[in-house]
Amino acid sequence: MASGTLRVAVVPGDGIGVEVVAEAVKALTAVADAAGKEVRLTPFDWGATRYLKTGVTLPPGSLELLSEGFDAILLGAMGDPRVPDNRHAADILLGMRFKLDLYVNYRPVRLFHEKLCPLKGARPEDVDFVVFRENTEGLYVMMGGHLKKDTPDEVATEIDVNTRKGVERIVRYAFEFAKARGKTQVVMADKSNVLIHAHDLWQRVFKSVAGEFPGIEARHLYVDNLALQIVRDPKQFQVIVTSNMFGDIVTDLAAALQGGLGMAASGNIHPGRVSLFEPVHGSSPPLAGKNVANPMGAILTAALMLEHLGWTEEAARLEAAVKWAVESDRTTADIGGRLGTREVGDAVADRLRA
Ligand code: IPM
Ligand code: MG
Image (cartoon, rainbow, N blue to C red; front, side, top):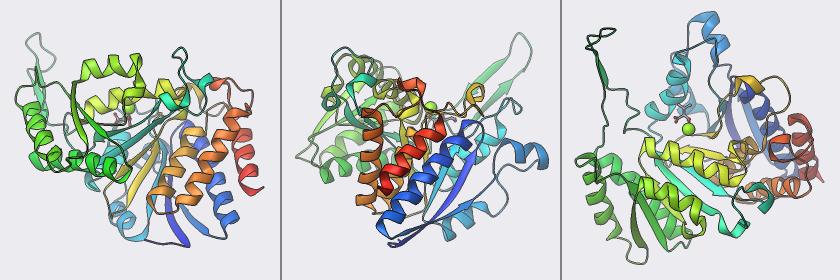
């Protein structure tokens, strides 16, 4: 992996993705300049507009190009009302997750200031955990079908695919992360009381992998109880690991504790391979083009990317600049401020260059 120069593929995508990625790029450039390093950014116009114009979602050869030519991918968001079935989003975002085998969806949940948290009395030290969401199987594999479609007797199925290898590698990643970061507990959330086949596999794998990490408490919660516990007492959590669909739902809930989707960052990772970083939020068509979207999630996503690529100091500087902007109310309206998207990005970039 590169040290002084990083090669980043930038895919702004649709809607507010374009606006927030522009600010993340500003912050990345500023932090690299300040360190005398370089982030080489290559833009890709994949998204709804290109799809509508050309019929192409992810151009042929893209995945090879990304794997061979780049250290990481920074993506904004996919989704556009002009593509009602969201076909391009499935091809591009889920296509990269699946075909690049990015099996770890890493979503840190951190509160930068108590004023951002809807929970009474919650302080930053009370909301500080990570969610590892399995990212390549489960209910996302799009296996299934219709029988007697559009008739009163219609049957629709969606198959939940869970493989021993797939479950084991995400569970092991969670424990390894916990060990590396000095955490003392990993929570696995499933619905094994009802999904008696697939989540029985999760149970067995969790117990067996946990056995390799004697210093770390292995705790199980049913996912419905996890949702309740995250709201009731988030402080009890350090590391959570769960399936693809449950992770999707739980990380939106958790984002609410951080100040909303505008504050949440994520990485789609395969250790040692090109990985994809994107804010948790979507393209938000109603907010697009108005300079109102919160760019913090995208800037924090850039920080995750730098951390992943070994630029830990620069990642810490990006986070510190976001924290400073939050503390001094240099923020967009969704988290209580009065600035526009670009003005927040400028404030963060100026701080990084100061
Ligand atoms: C997310 C999003 C995606 C998902 C959508 C856009 C397909 O909600 O990254 O959490 O469900 O994974
Ligand atoms: Mg989601």
